[in-house]
Length: 532
Image (cartoon, rainbow, N blue to C red):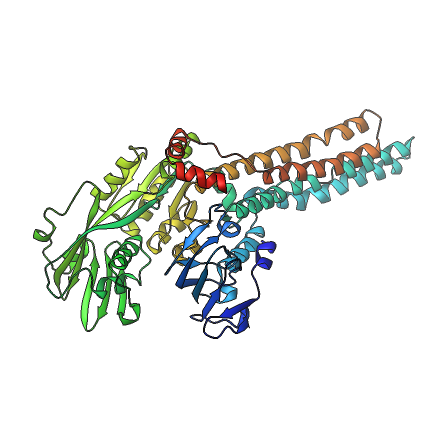
């Protein structure tokens, strides 16, 4: 993390005049320019140009990511081969790198349950050992027994052997190594407590986080209102929901750029849609529930618009009338099926909780070949919380989400896992684990790391206790060897540290048949990976 922070340059170039300024002086909405080979020092949005960016240091993504107009770029990433002009979205101290470093630093101070138990026991253990050792040395002396040297040596052996250094180091060193390994892999765990909870997870609930939306059809019954107007795009550009991204992208393909500054009174209705006012026109965009609440009849326009890939219909309501209706296609991202199979191989059950329609949910479920055990659709945020509470009764539960309406469920779950630094800030702050990229395959990777960490902690505690037996046994049998006690104490401490550091080794991710078949069927992907 220190190397990542130092990697971000302290200077930036203003696009309008080429003036070099300190990053600390850069304000939000300033326009900066970046050439090929330069490290991006601050978060922003590309407003001109195109390039490929190396995000490996931040997200763990080994393949360069293409950036074009309206793409998000992050501090600490490298512009590989293009010239881009960026509008800043954060101050330097609020950049993704700075937030990640701050959260990781806080995580290191967040002790796990096992560590707290050991620390509490040490408060009583250490004074007890001192009293016992003093008693072994003082009591025989008071009674003037023979061979007091043997008693002194035995007392010293007990004192040195009972030193709890190895036991105290058994948990925090393993936790620190695991947090470091996770951060280097693009997984931010906000403390040892959550790492410990992640190792115990038995159920994982998803909010269709591993899907992407595209608009396949749009209909309008208003001659003054069509899909190429700015209305939908401008209002949806103020929302972070994936469906909003799909609508904005659809309009961009038709040459329409959003103008969010024209939107007044923007509101979000969780589980229904959004509202905004443009040119004194009240416009709502959302699902059938929203249209019905606005008193609109939604039947005739939607007839015949559905196809086999639909996830449900969206409605555009203007001044209390349905003026547009659109169809969204929902497709699973690469790696979702592999993630479900890996979770099953770890003995973890899966569930899907979504606010989308039942048809949309079944469509995604079919793409995954009914691999998910429990499926719930058309849920409001409070209903997701209720289901998470029910799942927690059957075992430790994790919730995966990336949007603002997922925040209550993320907070309720034993472990909340937020997806991507580009997701909702509320979800990122509420979640206990953040996957820095949108690669959902990092989720089983995080669980495996948590389980390995728990195993290392158990091994360390066992080593800390067992290795104390030899010098104590020799002392009781009449051979109180102080050098053996010192060797045992220091050696065990080093052994615990080295055993914990094994977590930093690179491990091979098991590949499912699904993953192997996908890679085998995509020669372009194989060539790219070979090049990297």
